[in-house]
Amino acid sequence: MNRDQIRGASRHLKGRAQTALGGIAGDPARQVRGAVNQVAGGAQYAYGRARDRADDLVEDGRHLAREGRDLAQEARRRGAAYGRRAVRYADANRTDTLVGLAVLAFAAGWLARRTR
Image (cartoon, rainbow, N blue to C red; front, top):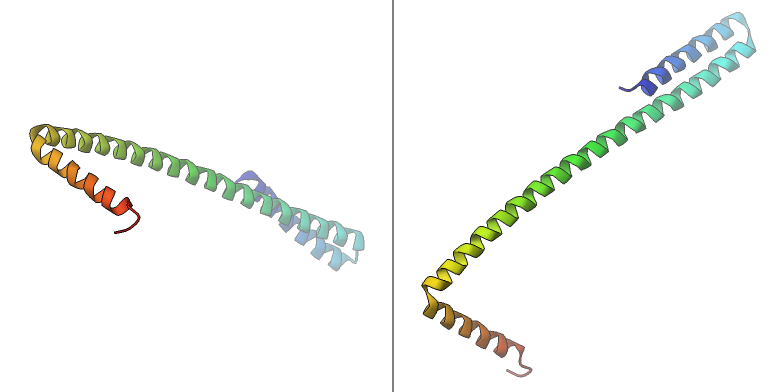
């Protein structure tokens, strides 16, 4: 709860009391001032709630950005590890790698031609 919510709620209650006292005393000016304070207090309270919600959304956005950055770093680390492993495998198994690439090239060419 922020300062605007507290001040708005207290002003709203003050307005309710003024309206009630104005009704008891038969003072229409006090009743009007009370109604004005009620409306102003309600508006200030609503503003405070909206500000609180905006602050929460900003914090949620920061949290999501941190999580996204962490996930990107993890993906980069895993991609580099898989790439190094693939290069080691290709170096250790050159014949198998060349045959596999030839098969992939043939399949891509066969799929790309117009008539089959």
